[in-house]
Length: 202
Image 1 (cartoon, rainbow, N blue to C red):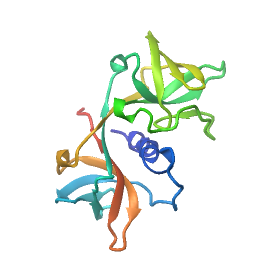
Image 2: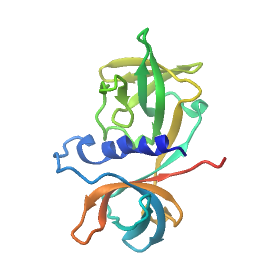
Image 3: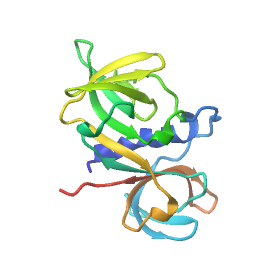
Image 4: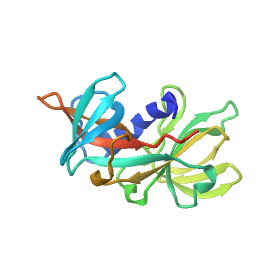
């Protein structure tokens, strides 16, 4: 798993908690996401050894959204899947995928739909937008969303991931995670979302 892959988890976390959910009030700025490895668990928390070399207690509640992100292949995308795509616009106006997230069905309807232009010029559809795969031809996705449709070419180096929901009881020591939440008075982190990152073997 590259540093780029870890960083691209951040939009996923942002969209599944906080402003990405419809009807959620805008809160004060949250601390940056915490990346690290689970070293211990108890009934209501985990301990994460972070990338900065410190141990942090992370509080888990019934409101914490836990997902697992695993590498997937293009041929595993099916019609009617809901996907989030980050794409760049080519000089001829076509779209080329940079990354794709395949979402579990239960995520449908929980995140704003549409397309959003990023400052970089890319279309931000990564995790913040659900798009229904209408059909697939070769390495081209034909997507449908409320405002219209999109045609996105998928090169061989595009990163593709599948997200699945997890239960707290499925977490284990040694799992690599990205956590986003709010700081507590005792210095812990109350997790709003936790993403388990599966690092493929080389």
